[in-house]
Image (cartoon, rainbow, N blue to C red):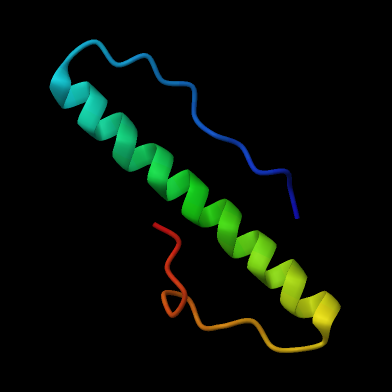
Length: 56
């Protein structure tokens, strides 16, 4: 387990901004999945399957 991190981004164009949003959403989803796994472990219940609980 490692701390959640977000990529450092400095978009300069609309295309870069769109790509940055995609990367940020993916990073938040990964972090949310880790939090869900920890919460499920502490509650004594199995974590949901990957993709079954989206975090958008």
